[in-house]
Image: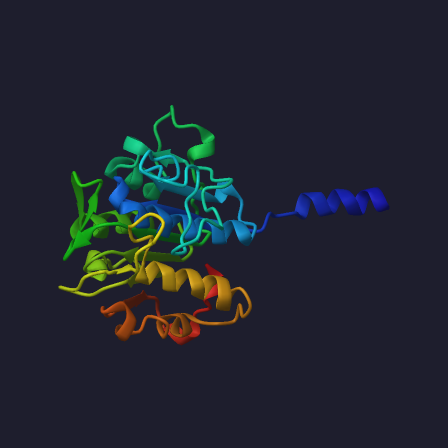
Length: 278
């Protein structure tokens, strides 16, 4: 009888769908240190929540910790005047240097890889899973820039997200962009069950935070730093907080930009969606 119950349980078992994450910095060079750090802050928070690396596609072109201009070798820290915590510890980079490009980024979003892509670099996107994508770098009205050489335009983002919807690559998706004119990359997106958040609106800039006395450069951007503290200090302790609570953190006085949220969901508003769902 016990054996029969165990056998039945095994047959009926269905793994709980796991959320998938794309964390992307689109900028290289030492003076863009902050944009690698922005992505690492989000990545390390996911790891704090025990999200496995096989659920995360981490794409950062610049190795800031090992850059020869870094006078604290091997260290990448988000806080001004500090060397710890070191965000570069235990990092599993899926794409780096020239592999961080428009083609590979689109391939990850479309869940299409060439046969030589190792399984460890692939996400498994499906209609049972939710998807969070955090991207940051340089951009402008209707575009984002990749490594200062190529661009992804708003109509291309609209086509990619429409394909993702058609192929049923997500149950719900939350796309976040931190750049100048960030929300304009998403304003043409019509795919359903998508939430789109931009750090700035049409014609606005995205600003860096402070200047580190050790490195003499800015270590983070204001929007990404606010998001980091929101995840670490608030959402971690109060998982029932909503996207409306999150949006209240992006005040104009500090950010000098109007963050904007677009929700392509039927009968749902920001106050109806728990931030922890993603």
